[in-house]
Image (cartoon, rainbow, N blue to C red; front, side, top):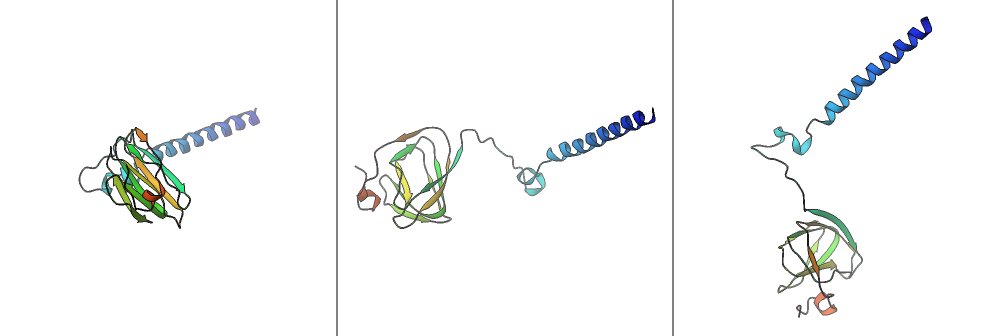
Length: 149
């Protein structure tokens, strides 16, 4: 009888301890952290839903590049590592280095890729669905010596 009672008491104490620990864990998990703590901001600031926003990382070998294309909404490009060539239709080709970024308006034809001598890792934030792919970037366009025809 005594061993049965002590087994039940031990089991009960274990379940109570588990209940207390899990309650504390759940309470802590539900507390706002970092960007959600009101005291980290002056004035009212709220997180907004990220529906329709996509984030990607892409690597390019030296000289690799995307075809001309158009995003229906905007695109933010960020050079995480290496260097990038980018051209917006009607503008000169330009280069971006590590840490630099560029915002591309929606509906504007453009291309981007690595410079000839260095690989590229880019981070891309696309602000909505829809992309239209077009023709490849020729070597003259890639070199910055020709416009899109």
